[in-house]
Length: 378
Image (cartoon, rainbow, N blue to C red):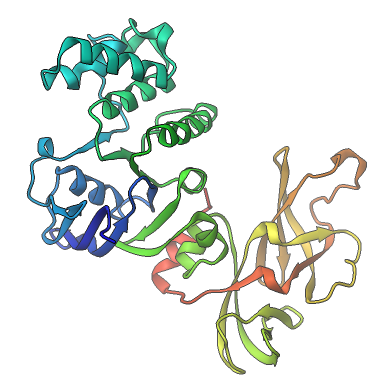
């Protein structure tokens, strides 16, 4: 089957910088697809090349099998929503949405019908005659989406569209974006550096690093089975351990020697052999933490540590716990009434345990990832 939107070995350089480096990527029709990565990773450059604002130095871009690499922006069935929304301040909400159809010289009756339908879609009937300065940031975002959709593009490109909104409004707009996508059914390509946004919205995510795609997959796949330390660190928090396989436990497990820990049991999906080096990732929420010794569970790993930091966040508490030279990030969800429990405090000696299935072996680890791994996740 022909890919809907396809980047065929695309490369873009600016001087000595490889902004996009040999990207080969196919996006499906009707998909909510996210390009995720830190600043300078190439995600916005990819988006601008689809829109026609940049041209690849090497490679081609195809939309429904048609090469659009050299087409000017106005001849592509693609619309873009930018961070600043780019609304016309002197036009009303209704007139901003109608602008594209008027430029295309559509009949007045068609314009009225289409704009009214869009106003209904974004639920701004009561604000249709207001100017952009008279509506909120979230409402401006919806107007920008409606104006982009009114010409019925094949692809809607969204470049960090929620960056200017506060946290609560951003969370609400995530739900509204998802609902709008479900209603209109066209392909959304969403650029963000916020892993929470990408995880909550996307059918699939491409995690980018230094102009290349590090991993491509569904949100749960990327979170639970990252293929590199970069992906594991960028998609949420993670704890990393370097160890050596000391014993194979048939058929699917092995034991690792990690400095400062008792032998650690791990699911051996990479089929490592005795003596092999292993780079292991364990997510903070996979750990369990208590003041009392843990129950005796099969395939559980257990270690003692000292609490170095406690951050209460309402629905959860984040702990930093020292185990020898390691500093473990641990998240404890509050599923029970917290005030009925004896609290874990700073300097407490605690038990930490996790199931062997919850430690994930990474395919690779690169020294170029060190700067990212030292950054606080977010």
